[in-house]
Length: 159
Image (cartoon, rainbow, N blue to C red; front, side, top):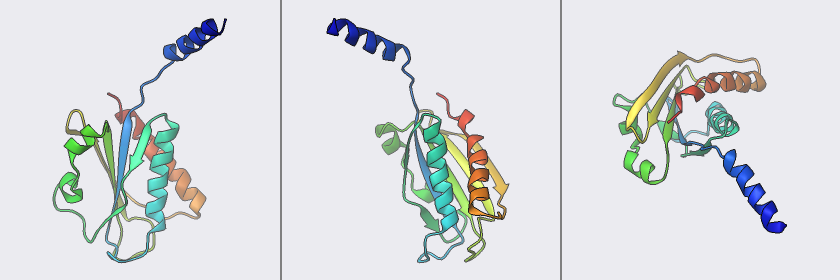
């Protein structure tokens, strides 16, 4: 009887197994002093990226926020020193870079945002989007808007 229940249990879950993509996130700040405090808006972006993709059923990870003095003049992969081979060996399927460009020393939300999505297995950029930042009345409004923006990225992450 116990064997039959175990077989039914395992059969049930094997029928409904879903393969989740492993996604790694990199938030890159530009325009802020290198030794400055952590920016709350960058933390909102990082946390919301992790939350949205986790809620969509993906396996998520992130690197520490990277702060660059100016916007990179080279490809984001080179500017961040991202290693595709290391990511592939670590089982990552996609990497998403969120580049947050702040006005010099500003505590306001980023002035411009850029997303770059790379497929690790295909070793190629599959999506890029740039848009202007905006100010919000409250933290709640900001996070709600970030969720809407980030959910638009989900369809680009399929094998």
